[in-house]
Image (cartoon, rainbow, N blue to C red; front, side):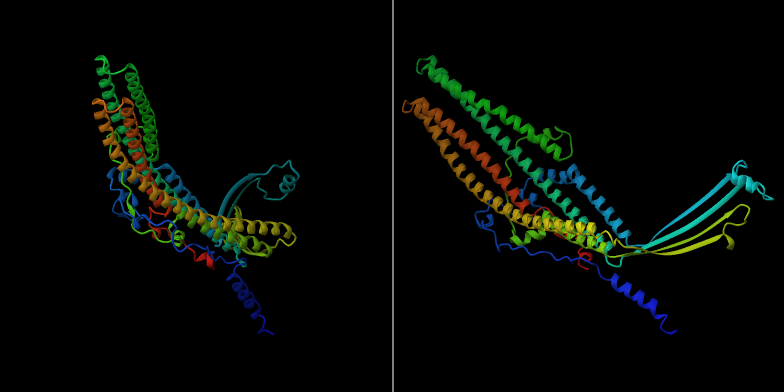
Amino acid sequence: MSLRRPLVPLALLTSVAALSACAVGPDYHRPDVPLAQRYVTPPPSARAAPAPAAGLSAWWEGFNDPLLTHYVSLALAQNLDLAQAVAQIDQARARLGTANAALLPSASVSASAARAYQSVDTPVGQLLNATPGYERWGTEYETNLEAGWEIDIFGGLRRQREAALADYSATQAAAVATRLAVAAQTADIYVTIRGLQARLDIANRQVQTQQALLADVTLLYSKGAAADYQVQQAQGALDQVQASVPVLDAALDAASNALDVMLGTPPGTHRAELSPPSSIPVAPSLADMGTPADLLQRRPDLIGAERHLAAANARIGAAISEYYPTVSLNAFLGSATSAAAGTLFSGGASQAAGLVGLRWRLFDFARINADVNEAKGADAQALAAYRQSVLRATEDVENSLSSLVNREAQAATLSHAESSLSKAKDSSMTAYRSGAASFIDVLHANETLLQAADARAQAQTESARAAISTFKALGGGWDPASLQTPTSLSSR
């Protein structure tokens, strides 16, 4: 009989250890999402490439525009949206630290000293006053060390740590997504500025052309070789072109202000630096697009959505663990004495206690059922959101590729049209002076050329913007290896 008794606590400890090695609730497995083997739209690299290929990690350098590269680098260092995203990482890291600390024993130390004076008018004071040697003044000292540990037998705390770890990884991914958005938006605004400057230059040159035409018609009118309505038509055409200049100026000011805000500076800071016109950056081709399946590892928004799904899965286990009892160990060690009793840390002043606690929500299963069902609903929502995010990501890539390919084709066609219409304008003016063409032909040729030149500048701008959108849709702008997404805890 004596041999069996030591085996009882040993068996109990072994059982607790075995239970602590597992956690209730479903273990997480990344869901499979069916994706196509390749993109529907042929990549631009399969067509005539307008510029050397650019890598995904720092795609903005492929535009071969030093000022564009400078502004993107500046935005990544100073943008305030990105600063907020980084601060959210610190908050998530703190929550993860709290979840880790919940698995460890806790301890606290307290100390107190009190001095009290007892009135003899109270019943207690009258009783004590009748005691020989009673002192109305008393001093007490006390020090205590308390320790407690909730044993995570059924894994509820570990599931909470899994959720916190997944949320932390999702926050990291969100910060990277913000970084990509900042880089793309900065480049997009810069390209828009260069496009507006090009359109403004076309309009101003057309104003000069219309002014020269008005001067010629006015001279002919003074000699009786032109009618008054022709002078009025020339003046109206000039006014129409001049009216487009303030609109372009306003758009240019707004784009410049938007760029300053992206760089974390007051509007107008970089206005002088941007004022010298420069050519519209030429969109580079793609060095390696990869496949739709690569988006799961490249796009940080998809990584974040998958980590949110892992967190929702872990919270199911945390909710289920409430069905089971919770065991906690508590210990108390201290010393208390009065000034009259002697030394604080003497043997007689010591005090100690040990406690094994059990908490079981035995009659609260209805609320636990509701919590479990809520956690399962959140998990189903996160799964649907993840799958939807994957579909949206592939849609973004397809739309961006289509826009890029077609905008490049449009720009090439309009460049050819502009060259032809420029020759037609010169020929119409020569024919008008020789009497072989009407003044309406001259005005029409000028108006058509202006429209073609403006459309060509817009197409070149949109082509570069489509390239930026494509790089962003592919998850370009960072190295996936830089984001460490711990998954070992969520697979236990």
